[in-house]
Amino acid sequence: MATQKNFQDIISHCKEYGFIFPSSEIYDGLSAVYDYGQWGSELKKNIRESWWRSMVYLHENIVGIDSAIFMHPTTWKASGHIDNFSDPMIDNKDSKKRYRVDHLIEGFAEQLATTDQAAADAVLASMDQLLAADDFAGLKNLIETHQMKCAVSNTCNWTEVRQFNLMFSTQLGSVADESDTIYLRPETAQGIFVNFLNVQKTGRMKIPFGIAQVGKAFRNEIVARQFVFRMREFEQMEMQFFVRPGTQKQWYEYWKEARMKWHLELGIPADQYRFHDHVKLAHYADAACDIEYNFPIGFKEVEGIHSRTDFDLKSHQEHSKKKMQYFDNDLDENGKPFGNYIPYVVETSIGLDRAILMVISEAYTEEDLSTEEKQDSRVVLKFPPKLAPIKLAVLPLMKKDGLAEIARELVADCRQQFYCFYEEKDSIGKRYRRMDALGTPFCVTIDHQTKEDGTVTIRHRDSMEQERIPMSEVKNLVMNALK
Ligand code: ATP
Image (cartoon, rainbow, N blue to C red; front, side, top):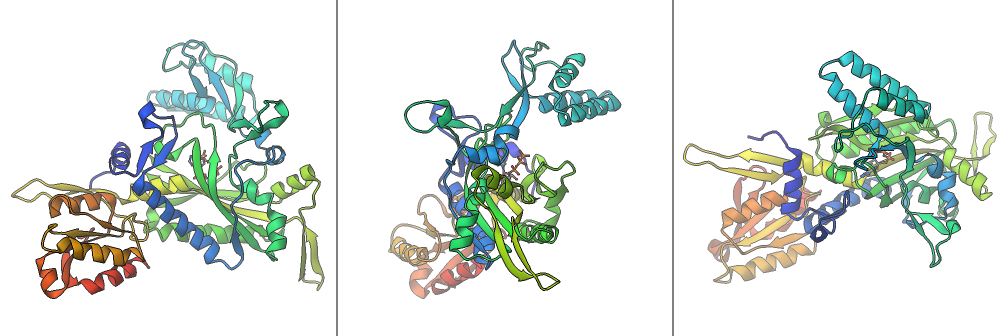
């Protein structure tokens, strides 16, 4: 029987079984930065490939690129990140602790709600109004009027509210000079926009078409303590779909459906997902929604689907003075070519790390296997076989009598097709449990009977059922499960 999933247990499991480690852990780690271990990086690669296949290989009109992390600084002026990509922050003068203003007020309102829901709602309503108006003095006033305290110093001794840009900056070249400031990209999308003409022309792409890319993005997140859900260095999988103005609504609906289909194909049930439509739209969007997954910490965003109008290309056209236009020679209803225009864009943007956390959270299962005779339990990661880091473990019952050699031959044969793992240490029972904890869908045991009749025992991870099959069938059985 499966029990309730606990976020802390999942984090510990990721560390203990080589999926995710805190970055530079020997130096006590670096806040909100993580490293993927031997199995985490394999899982990451599998999810990335699944996305790439569904977006690029299965769409005739989508191609992939790999643009640089560093970009010309004007890119971020044009995209609005220099002016708008910031959160209002406040520091407590006594503890020196910095808070995101909305988080400080929300935390206060949450406490207040336990005794006075109406008062808490009023505080939140004032906050929303002040945030929308960028009224920083008003926000500070709200914090002081309600005597909101710092959790560390327990005082209300606050600085002014200031905007804090989330982009990391660095210097190009050896001499530090203001004009040399460049940024680590906070999203991969801009690398696609600035290459719009290059790809359209060299690929002879006809609208509608898409450009996809996977890569690192960096944000100096202020509040970042939810494991790989919110990191300062993370990976995004983004696709910009360029369409004729006026058709964006229909493509927005198309991509909502297509992206949800991909999510369901990860083997996660529909009731674990929901769409969340944005009410307050970003300045560049005419429609936007998130796909949220029911994490052990509640429903939260995994992916955004945004209809971004012509905002980005138009802005790059203005800043670069290069025409970001497309000539559409398809005919309109009056038989005239649609002609020149700046395309509209529908974007799909998913965080690879959040997708990993989602897949692990869904797969993580604690099972009570106790019988009347003995207490027993196991932790198993029920990954769909195509995402599992190890597809097959080959376990000789013992090293002697040539069993290890037979096992190694099978491993060598299977490794041509998929990742296969050889393990001879410990009892078979222990080895099975370890493979359960890594999410390996199949284990094969080589024993003395294998030598006599060429058969092996194959164990299925989820049902724990075992069956005897010819060793020659193992590879195909696994390959079929990967389809
Ligand atoms: P949030 O509201 O959670 O900060 P966002 O709306 O700023 O996210 P987008 O800018 O739309 O996110 O980025 C697209 C996707 O990138 C998100 O859906 C998420 O999966 C991922 N992402 C964004 N910020 C982070 C982060 N700090 N760590 C990990 N993934 C992130």
